[in-house]
Length: 382
Ligand code: MN3
Image (cartoon, rainbow, N blue to C red):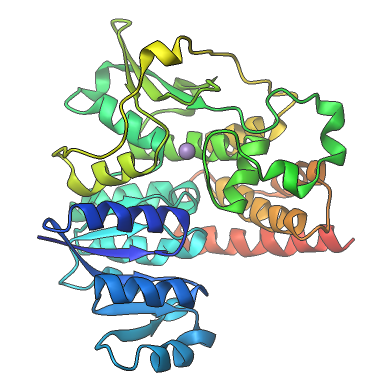
């Protein structure tokens, strides 16, 4: 039995991860679950999976302790204790389903203990991919991505020699704005942005999918995860989201991973790797599918994608600044404080003001994050 810690068990990835574990309950034991403020659902999950540890935001710790009085579960604080949880001897796999750069601390702790890490979280690898990958090599920790595109690339590259890789074709559904004219973007409502055609996800990532910033983050992520130059990563719009990404080799052969759009599949693969087990998911029906479409991304319509690719090329603390400014701007949009098109304007302005060396340490990354957040808040207020 593999022992699993899930950071962010009440979000959509966390909920799906627990569904996978429930089906494969003879193979996995949940050791710890963490959430931010969804105490109700966390409580339910504790009842079902009986973990040894849970963690929530500091202000809810006392409340949750009271609620879970009768069980033996230890209640910890997500603001301070994630590093401790991720480094526990009794944990084999750390599944990082929480969002935000706060995942960086438990990510690095898990690496130092040589654990298997299954990240769905983007921010940690986007802002500190070079440090994460160097540490993972040093401590022999295995990183098996959950994000559907990274999982597809991981699967396509399995057993291959890296020198044989020519291009990664990173697919994108194109988001909710694919067929909307750019001149209508200014008046887009929050509700219109939050209806993603293919995937059900959290709000922040759904907005990032609409701007294609999410795809830009994935370019940066793929660069670090698979050690390939940004120039070798080609973004392809594929609205059906059936091909989850592809690897093209030097001989011109392309290996793609295809499946129904259901996150339980890449989650299960990350947990059971290198084995595969049956799922209850339906098979792709090619007869019904009949066609798949592909097109080039429109960088003028979606400038966030170009900005992210540029930040990925420049390295240093640029990805950190990009991520932090985007997080603040998207939140302001979701709170009705700025227009949809202001998201890009704010992020672009801050990235352009930033200066960074190519090589940066963890402190410089965190300082850049903090600086970008402050600058973004100033712009939003002004
Ligand atoms: Mn994705």
